[in-house]
Image (cartoon, rainbow, N blue to C red; front, side, top):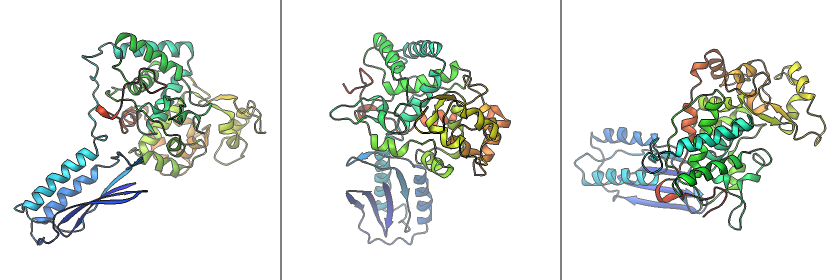
Length: 397
């Protein structure tokens, strides 16, 4: 889906291109002289619109995924009433169209309305991880799988209903994504403190930060104020979530479509320094006898992962054999040694464009920052009247 802003003579045209067709909104009469010297300045000004990327909004049940702006002509001088009106309208139009991108999340969102929200969530999350250390990885992953589908709106938590096809059962999530009950517990605890105020989407974001911090990983300031969706999309989940056998370019493209860079891709993948994976997700890799896997590592992994499908499909192995329950940079060292458990991990160090980033994170652990988690948490949040506060995270009110 592409939203294009074009200049036609002295006419500004906004084109909405979708599967349902193309709608065009024009401003100006197209008959003015545009040979003014100042027109170059307007072209430069409009170049700034190119930074408004990854804006989207729901329109006719579809999505605007990318914002492309092209300047195909010179515009009249600043003395022209037309260009003044057109520029003014253009700014208003893009700001309103891209309200999701410009959403004003704030770390102090609940400061007045629910000052104990964060401490209540933290207590609940720490208690869950204390019972099962693996839960930390599951909570971080749950937040990731939420944000990559429809944005960070807690759509992944919704169960099947007559009007909703849950995201929980697509290939990338089924019998894999977990910790739903931990989010339910945190939500219940928050509802007891301040009912109807804290969204499930915000709880997911805070839980991921608290989980990382609890197991020795980075911490960051979580921006708050997200609302919960009233819909889920199994089709988008199937399309937009990475798969364990994805190649490097596929991963780069997926992350870029969410406004994340190659460095963000590597950093977020680094969360695989904790957690476990099922045999079915790495069987092909450990039996491939490929040049991109350490032979001794493959032999060790085969002990609990039979070669024949579906035997042992659900058998678990730690993503990091050395420190499976601690969040540090050993993940990157493993990739350098060809000991990435998943194919989608090892491709990050396979002679491609991300090799230098992996090397950097391995040599300088301090460069592995939480910026990527903050950026991921900013993916297309619902705010204001665009969403709701669910009372129970698994269903719409």
